[in-house]
Image (cartoon, rainbow, N blue to C red; front, top):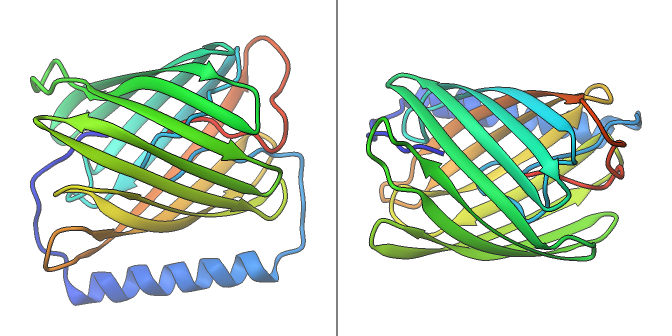
Length: 234
């Protein structure tokens, strides 16, 4: 995910974002509806599981400029059970961002992946390599790893809880200036369409509260559908 210059977000924006998260959380707790959908991804960090072979996910992402390019399109493609790639198209500034992931351990509950993110030849941003491990069960997903950004190493930590095949709550954190702690959820509205809103709290002081949402539709071009508790990277 590309990073942009920081700017202030007003108090009204903070209250609006907080109120939206409270309403969404109430929806999760109150809902008992289930579906055949699968959950995928956390809010800020990559995850050690891969997009299913033959699965093509198209996403629209909107977020505060302090997080990244405020409007982005994303294509994520699963090539094999151990390889995937992703392309982001940013509009402000005009940008193309590339990432890829390779699974070293791909059989749950233990996962291990390597790859790189945030490579932007257009803006002369070097790829950021990472390594991540995960322990995935039906409901609990634990993630930890590290990434190299510029001249420093940063820690990656994440956790998700799947209530069922429709609802997930998730938190993650990446160390370092310009990164954040996040809390959000994923709602699978249909088998292949999902929405993931989240709130970011910046690591830098004064801490800012920022908004983020991504809508994703997945096409199954070849191969079978993934298990309902599996997740793919973002």
